Amino acid sequence: MSDELKYDSVKFTVFCIEAYRAAKGLSGREVTDLFDRHGVLDFIEECGDVLHCQGEANTIADIDDYIANHREAVRGK
Picture 1: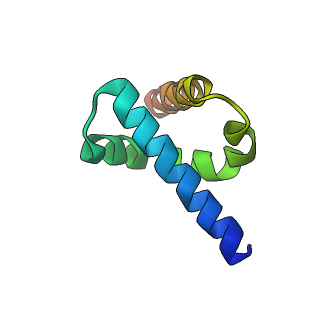
Picture 2: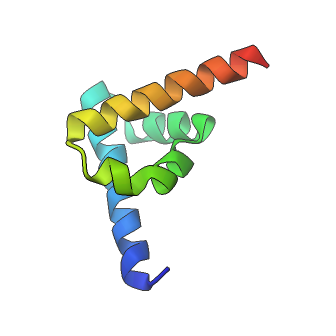
């Protein structure tokens, strides 16, 4: 991956964290803890091309869905 693509990926990840934080009224620490616990940063990296093409509300909804599905998968083990 080129430096420019890495930079764009980091910018988009930060955008997702900040958008989620603002939408949910959470602190930055709360969001990063939540994202770490559920592997959301990996999800953003893997699906960034699709997420990037959506609006902010849809990206937040997809992150919520991913977290909910991850919680269910963890409970099911």
